[in-house]
Image (cartoon, rainbow, N blue to C red; front, side, top):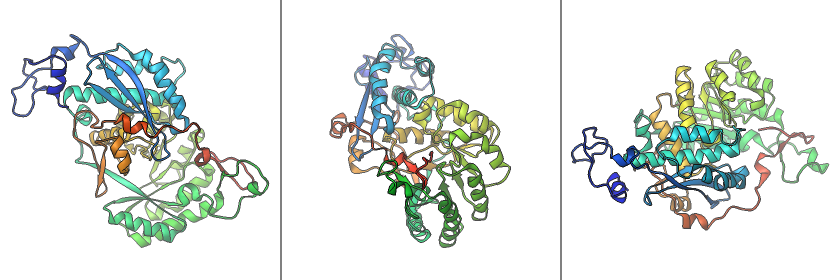
Length: 444
């Protein structure tokens, strides 16, 4: 849909002026139509959730419908660990709260929704708010006839540079996987042993023999992990050379002082960054880490509140802000985080795993294209099934992510296809459950 279609659907056929915002290629300049200046305003008619789970990963999208039938927006609200709670927050609270509001007033809607529950900065309500916020930016882009990145200031780069994941059960297997990824054009590779934290790679877990915990709980020998990671970097660097940038995710699963000691051992292998060395409860260790190593640090995947990133960013305690955009409330707060980082030389590295919907990945990429202090983006590859549900999703080529250049976020949602894959009634908690040998729970 281009801007002419939107105007036609609103009964607008002409506009006058000389701002040029509304001129199509080859047309005379036109000013912004009076209907989009509040006479009449475009109003929110309905806020609803769209849920789908085609690959066992619960995805949640917010659809904002307006009083103009052809003008709708989509935003990502995916929080798979509490999917049903987010759906309830959207359908039972945001819908009623937002009906009748002017879709243009994104900042006002964000601020009033943010405090509407009084208590705030929790992941359930933040994700619901994110879906609303991203959908409003999608609508604004469609109204302007521009991709969202243009509304954020235009491109600072031609595409979004990304890293991909190399995994294996030994340094040799990881190096082989890294070389495969490099052959696909990637210049940045994250290297992991046994997924996150070398899970279940070492000796057996005594807690399982004792019948403690759940049978499917994961086991991590933290000392084995701390010993193996420097060896992993040494081998992969030798096998893959100096040109590739190497990343690694600690995933907060070791004690802070152990993490600091391990990171110091990695300096000779020149990591691009080491991710999430400390849990959110241990933010105070960042100053000590900064004083003991020059290895770049990425942090923020578990952050929900400005209180978690404001002080560390302003003190330059880490080098990349790695927040999950839907966890903090969408594009509006993410742009503020990016602008904050620019003044303290903190670059963006938004979280972009499989449990982000294609709409959310598009939101990441539009910000990545616009902000000057972009650092790197986690890559994503969508299956044919996901592309059927989310036509227009971003795509990868030679290690870069590209977005659909259509107005807004450039993605549609096929609700009939989405409905074929309903949410499961229960969540599989296995991924989050990790224990020490004696059964003590390890926090991610």
